[in-house]
Image (cartoon, rainbow, N blue to C red; front, top):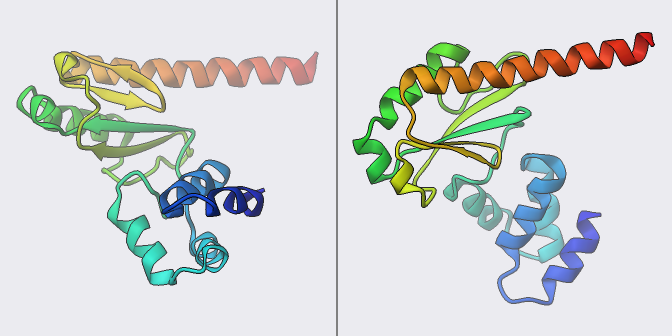
Length: 162
C-alpha cells in the first residue's frame, strides 16, 4: 500500500513530507524500518528522512494510543494556563508529555498553536477540540473518554455473550 502511494507522490516535487504523513497514517508512527523503506523508495539518504521525522513534532517514532491528547502551548494558551492543563492531565493519567498510558488509551503531547486562540487554553483529542479549559474541566473531559471506553467494552461483551 505504501509503495503504491510513494509511486504517486514521487512525481510531485519534494515528496518526502507527504510520504511520511501517509506512512504515519498507515502505521500509526514511523519506526526505523519504515523510515528506511521510505528513504530507499525515494532514493534519499536515511539521515535526511530521520532529520525530517525528528524535526517536526507531528511525526512520531513511537506507537501512540487510541486517543492522542495534544495540549496547545501557543502564546494565548500559555498565557491562559496551558502549563496547568498539562499538569492536570499528567496527574489524571499518571503520565508525562510524550508518554502513553499502560492501557494504550491515551498519549499526552504538546504542540505550538491550533489556531483556536479565542478558546484558550485548548487541547485536541484526536480531531476533537476542547477550549476554555480549567484543570478540573480537562480532567472531566478525560473521565468522559474513559466512561465511553467502559461503555464500549460492556457493549462488546454483551455482543459476544448474545
